[in-house]
Image (cartoon, rainbow, N blue to C red; front, side):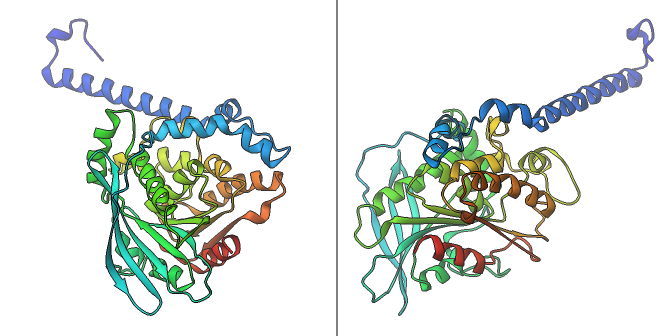
Length: 358
C-alpha cells in the first residue's frame, strides 16, 4: 500500500508498485484486446452480406469483401512492363522437363520459380498446379530435394508424373528474414504477403503468353506457409479454378490469440510476418474460403499437427462448407483428416485436383 508521501518510501517498494501497476495494465490490455478479437459474430454480421440466391448473386455480394482483403494484404499495383523471362534447365528425365524461371517483377526484384512440364504424348496441353512451399523451405523441396523429414513427399514431382504442369514459386524463407522485409513493406502500406501474391500473379501473366500450358485449368496446392498463400491468393486471383491447403487451415481467432497446450499460438512465437493489420476484423479462415467459393476447395490436416487442435479445424471446416451447401454445390469442398502431423499426404488432394482440373 502506498504511503501518504511516496517520496519517503523505500526505493524497492516504489519499484514494486511501478512493476505491479504495469503488469496490471498489460494484462488488462491483453484481456480487452483478446475479448474484442474473439467477439467475432457482430463483426461478421456487419461486414458480410452474402446472397445465396444464385452463384452470380453470391459472387456479386462479396465484391466489397474481396477488395477489403486485397487492401489488407496490400497487393502492389500490377505494372505493364516486359517480362524479361529467363529459363535455365534444372532437371530432365523421361517424364518431365524442369527449369528455373526468373523474370522481372517489382522494382529491382525478380520473380523466381521452378517450372515443370510433363512429357506427354496425347497432344493435350496440361493443366497447371501452383505448388507452394512452407516457411523454412524452397521450391526444391516441392520436388523432393532436401526433405529428410519426408514432409513434402516430392509432391511437385508426383504432380508432373500425373500429367500436370507445375509452377513452384520461391517465397522469402525464414521468420526473421520475413520479419525484416515485413517492416519495410509496412512503411509503404503493404505486406510481404501482398508482394508475393502479386509475384504469383505476375508468373501467371507470363505463363499466359506460352502455348504449352492450359491456363483455363489452374489449381493451387500449398503446405504450411504455402497453405496460407493458397488461401490468401485464391480469393484475389480468378485464374485459379480450384485450391487445396495443407497444414494451415485453422480456427483463426484461437490460433492468433489463445495460448493452448494443444497447439502453437502465433501470439507467443516470433513470426512477425503473420500479423496482417485488420485480418480478424473481417477474415477468419471460413470467411476467406467463402471468397474462394464457388470454386472447389480442399483441406489436408493431420491430427498430430501442432499448428492446430483438430476438433477446432473440423469446426471451422463446417462453417466453410456451409457456404457451399447453401449454394447447392457441397461436392466442391472436402477435407482429408489423417493421423499424421505437419506433412503432405497427397493422395486425397491428388484425387481432388484430377476431378476438378480434368
